[in-house]
Amino acid sequence: MANRPPPVVLAIGGHDPTGGAGLVADAQTLSSLGCHPVTAITALTVQDLVSAHQFQMVDSDLLRRQCQVLFNGFPVRAVKIGMLGSAEVVTALAPLLAEAALPLVVDPVLTSGDGSLLAEPRLNAVIHSEIVPLATIVTPNCAEARTLTGTTDIDSAARDLLSAGGNAVLVTGTDDANGPDVIHKLYLTNAAPQIFSFPRLPGSFHGSGCTLASAISAYLARGVELTRAVDNALRYTYDTLRDAIHFSEGQAVPKRWGRHDN
Ligand code: PLP
Image (cartoon, rainbow, N blue to C red; front, side):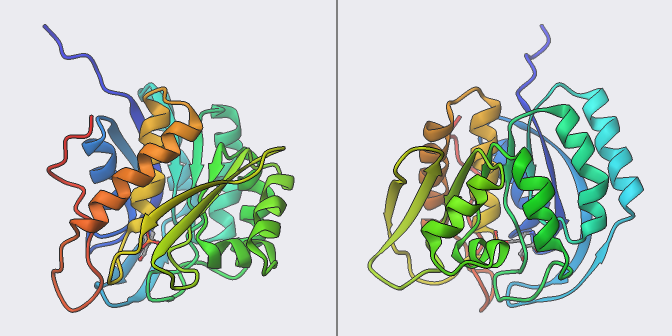
């Protein structure tokens, strides 16, 4: 008897050859959470676990065609966006995403873990105006929330993203302050923010944001309600970071494989 197909998630983002972040991270996360990843590459990057050296965008028409063909050929249940890289890519993708009207998780990647730029300067503004309004949830870290909105205060930045049309905003707190706990805040319209707190793990990680956003998209594709999807995904991500692997002196890679959280 044929196997029942798992939920399909389209991951759109950059390729990180280290396997720590980018589409490999998305594919590992989605697979380990019982979904089938289909992928469209926005950019190729040159990097190791210490820093990102260079990136080159993929032709935006080719990217749009890839997404079109995947939407036509698969019963896609959710879309996850990571590195977009250029404003041209946003212009190519936004109409397709609007038409698809699927749960959309947006990780607004602007830099790599060491702070190297993975975006052209104009990208902030077009993510804010064209992608945020389509998002089921946007998952910036504190630095990304500030850059996207030009607002220093995190509560105000999150409210700004909701006013721009985002349905929900999860601001992750790993990059903020240095207390014993990491505080993540989920903002929904007309509600007080919900707090998710985890013990701060030592060291730094390559692909934690990708893992989290992909995990949220996996739970949404499986039909889990948004707040529960966020809670599940944060716990899953914490476990992958607690068990992360050190391949070199650089950032550790979240252990997304060999898990059975389905
Ligand atoms: N996407 C790509 C292609 C990357 O290279 C990176 C970081 O290097 C990211 C996303 C973001 O990674 P993180 O999840 O560590 O924020």
